[in-house]
Image 1 (cartoon, rainbow, N blue to C red):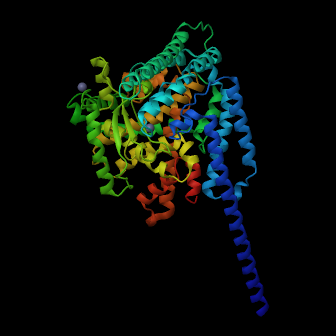
Image 2 (image 1 turned 180 degrees about the vertical axis):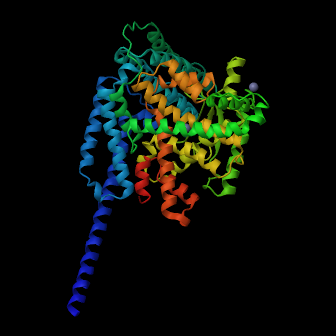
Image 3 (image 1 turned 90 degrees about the vertical axis):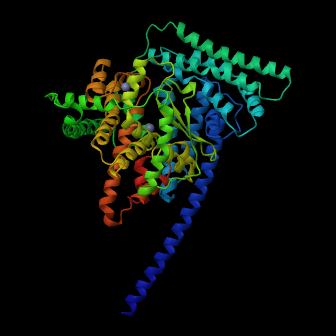
Length: 579
Ligand code: ZN
Ligand code: ZN
């Protein structure tokens, strides 16, 4: 008996000793890894100074990297050297937080190598070359006095001619779609040199001679931008590449960009199934609303046509082009109030959200978006960019407004702002991991916004009105069809006609919206899958947690903990939350 006791005691001591040693090892490894990350980010900014500025790291604001062969070798060497450095760390000895940082760095570096060597969009996508946005950010940033920022801009402008010369040399058989996008976006953004910079010159206190010099530098910059657009317009492109990525590149890009636990084709199948379920739910609601909206009109036998007629009728309730922005502005405080009343997630009242007209250099891809301050700019403004309908004809504006009708506009605000992207980004910038703040996972970010829509309605937002749910399903159908569309266009040769049928007849979109989506799918790849993939993974995870924790499940706690890890892939957040 005594012997047994002492053996047990010995076992306990030995165990305690081992576990103490393990803890020491772990914290040593974590300290080393933290030091490595710090150095990694410093070196990253030397290779990608433009990215650094956009994240609020202003040491290299005057640098403009010329995108030539030498530069690609620098990028490849950087990636390979850091993949080697990662190998010195034993993944198992790191904290959960560092494990995910390790995997995100590794993914980023492998993705860089793959992009340069295999994807090669630097050859076929002329819209990768555009300096206007980065200059606009410098001009609008408020981290330094205007005069200093304008001086920095002038130094940076010296490389613009070489930058566009390298771009011209890189381009080989570009796609027609990316060529047109590059022309539109470069010409759309050139006003930063021609107008914004010139206007700002009047506000700074320097000699007339100095102003003259600065104005000439900006004029030369504008000329280089316009020359590039001109070069693209005149390009003798006899064998343009197809904008369709093809199965092999697509599957790889999906894995790198989405970092899902599912493959591209698994998500495609889930989306096809989900579309069927949504159509069933929408039929039930439309059938219920028929008399209210359609009176005694005969019901079509085709259920999709029945749904369409009810949706079209409800869509007539919408705002006007002139009040589009103010309607959004009034909506935001109401969303905050609902979230506080229902105790859904903490919203930091000290972080302002400013609604503004979409800057010119962003025009062409999306209708509303969030620009948030980077990890170094914790006190910067978060902007809600709203596309303007200023130069649209009445029919185009009407079509757009029916799409963003009374109900959908509220769901858009939930998605883009509160508790969607805006809220998520505020949490993300509080994240202790610079890696997650920088290599944010789009599927998690978009998935969160799409999840937020569903969560708000489930919590009673919109008073469970059948109109609100019907419109929500229509909106959710859009994310679902985004995945179907993207996969089908890039890997299954879906034609524009087939895409229009999917978007307009099966997803009930207006023509303007459907055409915008076609344009987007022809200049992006995989990005459109973020929404449905992230949403599906987050929703499945929440339901699993509910089941597991039963009465102890707390929705507010779940949301805050989920967001506290920053923009990591959902599969890693699941690990961090103890699954
Ligand atoms: Zn109308
Ligand atoms: Zn979004």
